[in-house]
Amino acid sequence: MSKLFEYLQFPFVQHALIVGVLVALCSSLLGVTLVLKRFSFIGDGLSHVAFGAMALAAVLDQLLTEALKTEIPGLSGNSMLLVLPITMISAVLLLRTGNNTKIKGDAAIAMISVASLAFGYLIMNIFSTSSNLSGDVCSTLFGSTSILTLTGLEVWLCIALSVAVVLIFVLFYNRIFAVTFDEDFAIASGIKASRYNTMIAIVIAVIIVLAMNLVGSLLISALVIFPALSSMRLFKSFKQVTICSAVLSVCCSLGGIVISLLAGTPVGSTIVAVQAAAFLLCTIAGRLK
Image (cartoon, rainbow, N blue to C red):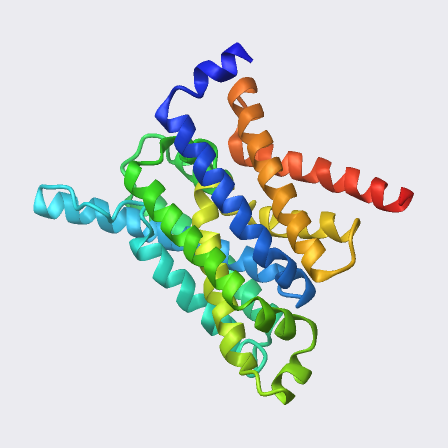
């Protein structure tokens, strides 16, 4: 405990805990909707798109810095200014065209995710001047240390986006509930289902970009899906599952960050391991119940 309290005095640890709690809360709120609408895999696809966008942002930053002989603030590989719009556009395109074209939804997600992952690694390999390219890629994919190197601007941007996600979920809770459970009935009731599906896709894109610094692009799906699946083992109503999912997600993220600090393990992998352990416990508790 003394070692933990000593770590908590450092600003970068405080930033990591704040961002970890906010990202866990946001991802759990929409995770229930994704699981029930069979959109679970879209999180994985969008995370790969975000990886490609981050690689592109890093290369652009490097090329512009070399050309102008000065750093361009806000266009680094960890910036959301380029990554967020690209991920949002991809989310909307996947949702709107995935089931209405010759390439169906699951195939479109698989194609875009693999292409984005390959494109991101390719341009990092071609243009990177880093002596530790493997370490940079590993950190981006698995979130090894990025959560502990957040700047003050990134923390405030994360807070603002997280508040926006929570407000959207609270304000449109009834509409999201209706579209999630029975889209045909929602349309018959006069609800613009396509509009709310698009809103859900955009919010998910925001969550994906926020979560990349926490668990990395390859582990984001676990942060979105595990709390929802764990809560469904214990409760049956949408509201109960959503509340339980939020509590579980926040607790697991906090526990994962603390264990990572004390044990020296990668943050993202540790959080997902705690999520998996919580899922097993919830499964056992659900069967006993």
